[in-house]
Length: 200
Image (tube, rainbow, N blue to C red):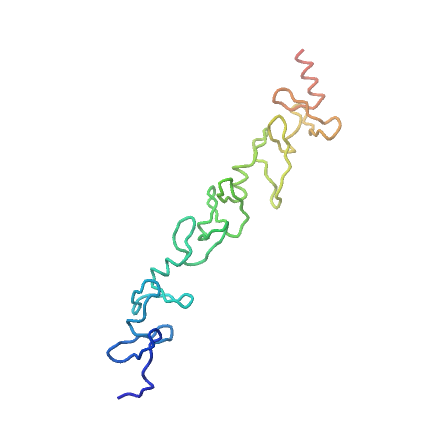
């Protein structure tokens, strides 16, 4: 008969592990095979993959169910987790819907529906367009704001807001450089007068 000091006690039930009740060692602790169970669903874990999380032993199914789920693809996040806008994402799932570039670690903004976009795509899609060059009016790289001129219910880049005849930069704050439109066209005072005179 063996020495009493060789008899181990089950970590869970605190009873001796002896010949007719087989044991298993998991995470350095002895258990009866029938006591080593998933703390969530009570499935026997001996011989199976299991996870020890916050002192609880979990089977693979319950471990996967305990993980944060990606807000976009709804699958468990098993590696790097990206948290943005109060939600969890796989880094590759948190991407601009226009260009599909990952937004991990780069500046982004959201549209009125809360959809995240990279800054370039957001500006391309939502920024006002210049009535002259038809390009988006967006901040230069590194800037967060841009000046634009609104005249005749249309938007203009500051550089595009000029007389269509002579090319003078129009600016209502500078004497002699104000805008004198005819229909939907931009003119300085001198070119406006020439056009009006030519019509008569």
